[in-house]
Image 1 (cartoon, rainbow, N blue to C red):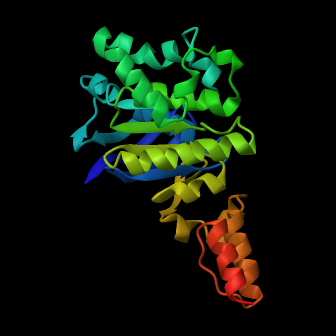
Image 2: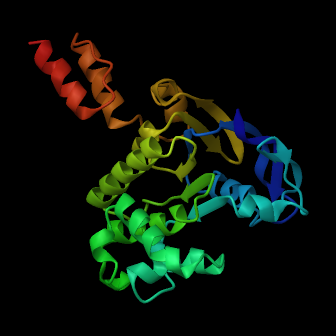
Length: 272
């Protein structure tokens, strides 16, 4: 079942050049998809169109098989949550606890039940011990986990991550990826859309969409799309490290179809 379907979508900021150029795609309920592309490819614009922050030039967007229009866009917005690349821009409260609770307060959630919700979602991202901390005292990875908790507490049907790890160091990125994998496993009905230019992040997903100059140029399972070296090179994208290593091992006559570094290590040892 499609959670989100986009048909022939077009958008322009200046009514001249199309930033989103006739894109059609379908995202299944409960799937984890990645929209991949360099800066200027249109991926962040696409995210804003999905949640109604921008108005399309033409085309259609369907949510749960219902076409989204000006009249019902608010219904979609209450069922989606967007996490941006810079968590500092999303922090409102003076403590982690206040920030996670902010969305619930806007929805007039009962105060007597709020603390239980805050604790549950802080724990889900590994931030339960930091509730009384000031957001400014946190690391980049910790801040992004707080932003994730603030989005998840709204119990969205679609979670959109717009370059959510692009400002993090490798350790912070790895931590957030691990949290996302956990969230995806524990919430089978939650649809996650990760927008990124980091090709290694796409390995987490069920499906990958690659955008270039506002067009959808390739889509499919990451095991297929991210092994297509010719297409990736034409778009100035690298193959993920794991697949580049797999390619080198194949040249050395070591067979491997590993999806993790640990599996790759096992294949290397098994070949000796």
